[in-house]
Image (tube, rainbow, N blue to C red; front, side, top):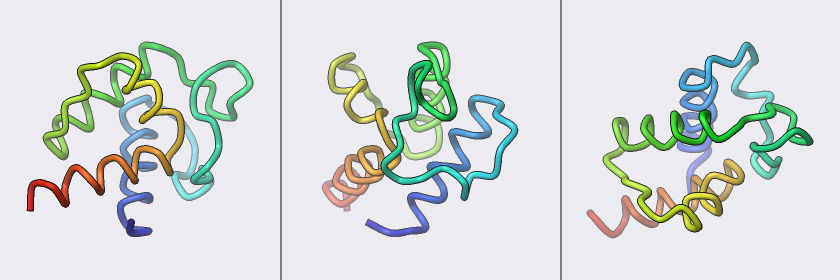
Length: 89
C-alpha cells in the first residue's frame, strides 16, 4: 500500500466532497463519516466518494455494508483499492 495512493485518495475526497482543507491533514486512520468525524462527511459525501473512486479507478462498490466498511477510513480505502488493483494486474 503506497503513500501515494493514500494521498491520492485524500485529494479525491477533498475534491469530491468540496471540503476546504489540505488533503495531507487527513490522517490515514481517522473516521471519515459522522458528526464526530473531523470532516463530518455524510451519506451524500459517501455517494460522491464512491462515484469518484469508480470514475478514477474503475472500482465499483455495490454492497452498502461493504461500502460502509471500505469508506470508513483512508487506510481501509487504500487497502481495498490496492488489493483490487493487484487482482486486476
